[in-house]
Length: 366
Ligand code: ATP
Ligand code: MG
Image 1 (tube, helix red, strand yellow):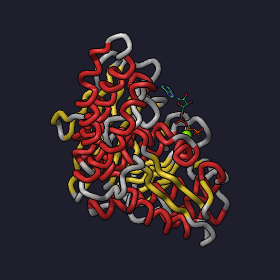
Image 2 (tube, helix red, strand yellow):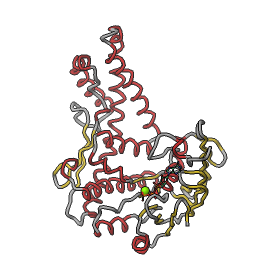
Image 3 (cartoon, protein in one colour):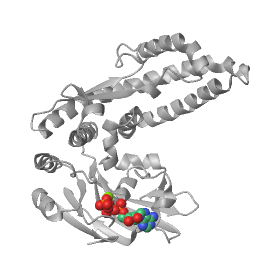
Image 4 (tube, helix red, strand yellow):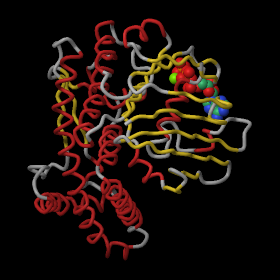
């Protein structure tokens, strides 16, 4: 999959500009605050109509403009499609593909991307929510039903929390508690199965990549952690449902007393260790970056196996904090599909990768 060209108008700090990308490696160079990440963000928008930096579309429109636009030719399985995203202040954005209106979710079918940005260090260092997000974003791109499952789950979870928070004032709310709990267990089981199967593949590929990345010195291990009563997260949905339900039944009273939801997929986590030590607690900056990047590169391999094509790889500011050996590993490893990589030092990187160089100066693409 690739983006052949992208035109942006009143996008972030861009007035108007076009970038033509090579099918392989593209090095996006420029000093700080020139618009490198903004350009990657525009490309990322093509994969699902959302930014990776903000939930608010109005922030994407150039400060003094009333609307912005992205127009791009994207290619998947040899077929080129034109995607257009129109942003208007105070209105919902509109997305079209070859002139036909699409939802953001439909857009995700035509282009997939794996993104690494500096915030992704939080996969290793922050709370479990970041790690669930890694799983959920990746699985949603691969399995069309998964995003719907998550949104059902979130709706049920909100309903259950409403009951648990409100029952002291309105005891009759408890009448429907068990129904919601049962539904949550059932959907949890489906989510857990997807997550466990994806985690298993991720663990294998990431360990391999991380080992190579660290010159054979480090072993990255990934373990998927879910509700404690689940004996095998890859078992049948029926079995997992029953096992979660056992946990649910044992914690029913505690949930009511603590007014919190103690059972379900919303507490899942991935546990990473580097050479046997918890990465969250002990990994250095460089190790955390190596691990996070290994996970992203592993995700890219899984996408390739699943779809038959590499997704577009978007690497924002990936090389800082890495020593020369690890930098070289990254630069050698990103071939195969299309890659867009931002950096401040153009010459060295461009020479090493043989990629196309795009220079960005104050919102202008050279
Ligand atoms: P760095 O090397 O520091 O990461 P960068 O080239 O990636 O820099 P960007 O994040 O792309 O920089 O941002 C470039 C500039 O765009 C910033 O100075 C930012 O203030 C500006 N900017 C962001 N949003 C808007 C907007 N909606 N309108 C105008 N300018 C914006
Ligand atoms: Mg940047």
